[in-house]
Image (cartoon, rainbow, N blue to C red; front, side):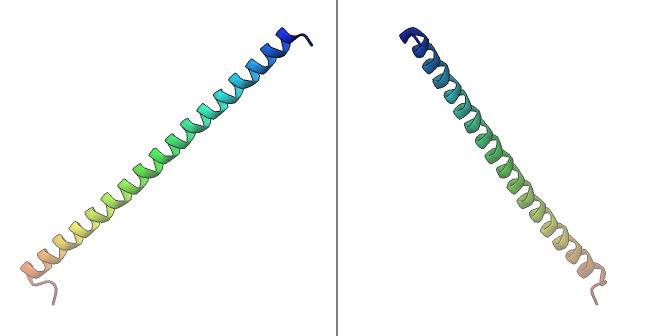
Length: 67
């Protein structure tokens, strides 16, 4: 294999490796963003549930239904 051909093959291999690394990094970022969104939604859901339970208890107390 000529020196020029080896150099081109080496450069192609480097480019492929860099592309794979960038794709891997993008996938990691997307996964992290999805996990963060999931956790945020779960936290929001818990807060809403707690508020609804508190409102329900308040209504029961005001109407005398908690006895």
